Image 1 (tube, rainbow over the protein chains, first blue to last red):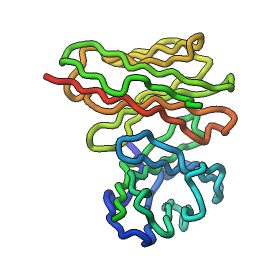
Image 2: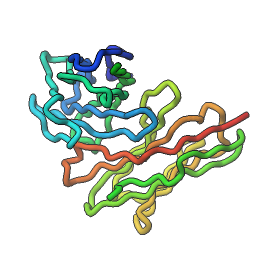
Image 3: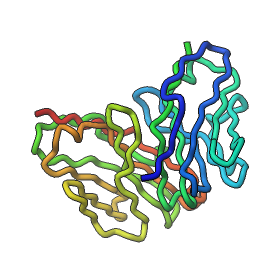
Length: 114
Length: 116
Protein backbone atom coordinates (compact mmCIF):
# COMPACT_ATOMS: atom_id res chain seq x y z
CA UNK A 1 0.00 0.00 0.00
CA UNK A 2 1.38 3.44 -0.91
CA UNK A 3 2.88 5.41 1.94
CA UNK A 4 3.88 8.92 2.82
CA UNK A 5 7.51 8.80 3.89
CA UNK A 6 9.04 11.25 6.32
CA UNK A 7 12.68 11.71 7.20
CA UNK A 8 14.25 11.87 9.66
CA UNK A 9 12.08 10.15 12.23
CA UNK A 10 13.71 12.13 15.00
CA UNK A 11 15.78 15.31 14.85
CA UNK A 12 17.44 17.18 17.66
CA UNK A 13 18.53 20.73 16.97
CA UNK A 14 19.82 23.69 18.90
CA UNK A 15 17.66 26.73 19.40
CA UNK A 16 18.18 29.23 16.61
CA UNK A 17 19.24 26.64 14.05
CA UNK A 18 17.44 26.03 10.79
CA UNK A 19 15.85 22.64 10.21
CA UNK A 20 14.36 21.05 7.13
CA UNK A 21 11.87 18.26 7.50
CA UNK A 22 11.42 16.08 4.47
CA UNK A 23 8.46 14.22 3.10
CA UNK A 24 7.82 12.09 0.05
CA UNK A 25 4.06 12.12 -0.61
CA UNK A 26 2.25 9.39 -2.48
CA UNK A 27 3.17 9.72 -6.11
CA UNK A 28 -0.24 10.42 -7.66
CA UNK A 29 -1.37 12.75 -4.89
CA UNK A 30 -1.73 16.43 -5.70
CA UNK A 31 -2.40 18.04 -2.33
CA UNK A 32 0.18 18.17 0.42
CA UNK A 33 -0.04 19.21 4.05
CA UNK A 34 1.95 19.72 7.19
CA UNK A 35 0.47 19.25 10.64
CA UNK A 36 2.12 19.37 14.02
CA UNK A 37 1.40 17.84 17.40
CA UNK A 38 2.98 19.23 20.52
CA UNK A 39 3.52 16.39 22.97
CA UNK A 40 0.28 15.27 24.54
CA UNK A 41 -1.82 17.76 22.62
CA UNK A 42 -4.03 17.69 19.57
CA UNK A 43 -2.88 17.63 15.99
CA UNK A 44 -2.89 21.12 14.46
CA UNK A 45 -2.98 22.20 10.83
CA UNK A 46 0.00 24.21 9.58
CA UNK A 47 -0.25 24.52 5.82
CA UNK A 48 -1.68 23.03 2.66
CA UNK A 49 0.05 23.12 -0.71
CA UNK A 50 -1.31 22.59 -4.19
CA UNK A 51 -0.04 23.37 -7.67
CA UNK A 52 3.27 24.61 -6.30
CA UNK A 53 1.82 27.16 -3.99
CA UNK A 54 0.38 27.47 -0.53
CA UNK A 55 -3.40 27.13 -0.65
CA UNK A 56 -4.04 27.69 3.02
CA UNK A 57 -2.07 28.28 6.19
CA UNK A 58 -2.85 28.60 9.86
CA UNK A 59 -1.85 31.28 12.34
CA UNK A 60 0.91 28.97 13.54
CA UNK A 61 2.55 29.09 10.11
CA UNK A 62 4.35 32.39 10.51
CA UNK A 63 7.34 33.85 8.70
CA UNK A 64 9.77 31.41 10.22
CA UNK A 65 8.10 28.54 8.39
CA UNK A 66 8.28 27.83 4.69
CA UNK A 67 7.38 24.93 2.43
CA UNK A 68 8.76 23.85 -0.86
CA UNK A 69 8.40 21.14 -3.44
CA UNK A 70 11.93 21.23 -4.80
CA UNK A 71 11.43 18.39 -7.27
CA UNK A 72 8.71 16.03 -8.39
CA UNK A 73 8.78 13.88 -5.30
CA UNK A 74 9.84 15.75 -2.18
CA UNK A 75 7.86 18.16 -0.04
CA UNK A 76 9.78 20.01 2.66
CA UNK A 77 9.03 22.11 5.70
CA UNK A 78 11.73 24.55 6.75
CA UNK A 79 11.86 26.23 10.13
CA UNK A 80 14.27 29.12 9.84
CA UNK A 81 15.29 29.78 13.41
CA UNK A 82 13.97 27.14 15.76
CA UNK A 83 12.56 27.97 19.17
CA UNK A 84 12.00 25.69 22.13
CA UNK A 85 8.27 25.78 21.49
CA UNK A 86 8.78 24.33 18.01
CA UNK A 87 9.49 20.99 19.67
CA UNK A 88 6.72 18.73 18.40
CA UNK A 89 5.85 15.86 16.12
CA UNK A 90 5.48 17.10 12.57
CA UNK A 91 3.25 15.12 10.25
CA UNK A 92 3.23 15.33 6.50
CA UNK A 93 0.08 14.25 4.68
CA UNK A 94 -1.08 14.02 1.12
CA UNK A 95 -4.36 13.50 -0.70
CA UNK A 96 -5.22 12.64 -4.26
CA UNK A 97 -7.78 15.40 -4.48
CA UNK A 98 -9.03 17.79 -1.89
CA UNK A 99 -9.42 16.24 1.51
CA UNK A 100 -12.80 14.71 0.89
CA UNK A 101 -10.98 11.72 -0.52
CA UNK A 102 -9.08 11.27 2.71
CA UNK A 103 -5.62 12.13 3.85
CA UNK A 104 -2.69 9.76 4.18
CA UNK A 105 -0.32 10.74 6.95
CA UNK A 106 3.34 9.92 7.27
CA UNK A 107 4.80 8.48 10.45
CA UNK A 108 5.99 11.87 11.59
CA UNK A 109 9.25 13.56 12.49
CA UNK A 110 9.80 14.23 16.15
CA UNK A 111 11.64 17.54 16.40
CA UNK A 112 13.35 18.34 19.67
CA UNK A 113 14.77 21.83 20.11
CA UNK A 114 17.33 22.15 22.91
CA UNK B 1 -14.93 28.07 19.50
CA UNK B 2 -13.89 24.48 19.63
CA UNK B 3 -15.06 22.76 16.51
CA UNK B 4 -14.41 19.18 17.52
CA UNK B 5 -14.93 18.16 21.11
CA UNK B 6 -13.80 14.89 22.55
CA UNK B 7 -14.88 15.26 26.14
CA UNK B 8 -13.33 12.00 27.32
CA UNK B 9 -9.65 12.60 27.95
CA UNK B 10 -8.86 9.06 29.01
CA UNK B 11 -10.82 5.83 29.21
CA UNK B 12 -9.64 2.63 30.87
CA UNK B 13 -11.31 -0.68 30.19
CA UNK B 14 -10.56 -4.33 30.68
CA UNK B 15 -10.11 -6.53 27.65
CA UNK B 16 -13.35 -7.73 26.04
CA UNK B 17 -15.33 -4.79 27.30
CA UNK B 18 -17.14 -2.60 24.79
CA UNK B 19 -16.16 1.06 24.75
CA UNK B 20 -17.60 4.13 23.06
CA UNK B 21 -15.56 7.21 22.26
CA UNK B 22 -17.59 10.37 21.91
CA UNK B 23 -17.12 13.10 19.34
CA UNK B 24 -19.21 16.25 19.02
CA UNK B 25 -18.53 18.72 16.25
CA UNK B 26 -19.57 22.21 15.29
CA UNK B 27 -19.86 23.59 11.79
CA UNK B 28 -21.92 26.06 9.79
CA UNK B 29 -21.34 24.15 6.59
CA UNK B 30 -23.98 21.78 5.31
CA UNK B 31 -21.31 19.77 3.54
CA UNK B 32 -18.45 18.41 5.57
CA UNK B 33 -16.51 15.27 6.30
CA UNK B 34 -15.77 13.57 9.57
CA UNK B 35 -12.85 11.30 10.29
CA UNK B 36 -11.49 9.08 12.99
CA UNK B 37 -7.77 8.45 13.36
CA UNK B 38 -5.89 6.14 15.69
CA UNK B 39 -2.51 7.09 17.13
CA UNK B 40 -0.79 4.08 18.70
CA UNK B 41 2.16 4.53 21.08
CA UNK B 42 4.52 4.44 18.09
CA UNK B 43 3.10 7.83 17.11
CA UNK B 44 1.81 7.49 13.57
CA UNK B 45 -1.70 8.51 12.58
CA UNK B 46 -3.76 5.65 11.23
CA UNK B 47 -6.89 6.43 9.24
CA UNK B 48 -9.97 4.55 10.44
CA UNK B 49 -13.00 6.05 8.71
CA UNK B 50 -14.32 8.96 6.67
CA UNK B 51 -17.98 9.93 6.60
CA UNK B 52 -19.64 12.71 4.63
CA UNK B 53 -22.42 14.85 6.05
CA UNK B 54 -25.04 13.41 3.72
CA UNK B 55 -24.49 9.85 4.75
CA UNK B 56 -25.97 9.15 8.14
CA UNK B 57 -25.85 5.41 7.82
CA UNK B 58 -24.02 3.77 10.65
CA UNK B 59 -21.02 1.75 9.67
CA UNK B 60 -19.52 -1.41 11.05
CA UNK B 61 -16.08 -2.73 10.28
CA UNK B 62 -15.20 -5.80 12.27
CA UNK B 63 -15.13 -4.80 15.94
CA UNK B 64 -15.43 -1.12 15.06
CA UNK B 65 -18.67 0.75 14.52
CA UNK B 66 -19.55 4.38 14.06
CA UNK B 67 -22.76 6.21 14.91
CA UNK B 68 -23.26 9.47 13.02
CA UNK B 69 -26.16 11.65 14.17
CA UNK B 70 -26.51 15.04 12.51
CA UNK B 71 -29.31 16.03 14.87
CA UNK B 72 -26.89 16.00 17.78
CA UNK B 73 -23.75 16.79 15.75
CA UNK B 74 -22.12 13.64 17.00
CA UNK B 75 -19.96 10.98 15.42
CA UNK B 76 -19.28 8.37 18.06
CA UNK B 77 -16.98 5.40 17.74
CA UNK B 78 -17.56 2.06 19.45
CA UNK B 79 -15.05 -0.75 19.84
CA UNK B 80 -16.68 -4.06 20.64
CA UNK B 81 -14.79 -6.66 22.65
CA UNK B 82 -11.78 -4.42 23.13
CA UNK B 83 -8.27 -5.82 22.93
CA UNK B 84 -4.96 -4.68 24.36
CA UNK B 85 -3.85 -3.70 20.85
CA UNK B 86 -6.66 -1.14 20.77
CA UNK B 87 -4.75 0.92 23.33
CA UNK B 88 -4.04 4.21 21.60
CA UNK B 89 -5.13 7.81 21.35
CA UNK B 90 -8.13 8.23 19.08
CA UNK B 91 -8.78 11.49 17.29
CA UNK B 92 -11.97 12.69 15.70
CA UNK B 93 -11.52 15.31 12.95
CA UNK B 94 -13.62 17.57 10.75
CA UNK B 95 -13.05 18.86 7.21
CA UNK B 96 -15.34 21.65 6.01
CA UNK B 97 -16.46 22.89 2.63
CA UNK B 98 -15.53 26.52 3.34
CA UNK B 99 -11.88 25.59 3.46
CA UNK B 100 -12.16 23.56 0.30
CA UNK B 101 -11.71 20.57 2.55
CA UNK B 102 -8.07 21.51 2.65
CA UNK B 103 -7.75 21.40 6.42
CA UNK B 104 -8.52 18.89 9.10
CA UNK B 105 -9.59 20.20 12.48
CA UNK B 106 -8.82 17.64 15.15
CA UNK B 107 -10.29 17.11 18.56
CA UNK B 108 -7.97 16.79 21.53
CA UNK B 109 -8.12 13.04 21.41
CA UNK B 110 -9.21 10.30 23.78
CA UNK B 111 -6.59 8.00 25.22
CA UNK B 112 -7.92 4.45 25.45
CA UNK B 113 -6.14 2.05 27.77
CA UNK B 114 -7.14 -1.58 27.47
CA UNK B 115 -5.72 -3.80 30.16
CA UNK B 116 -5.55 -7.60 30.03
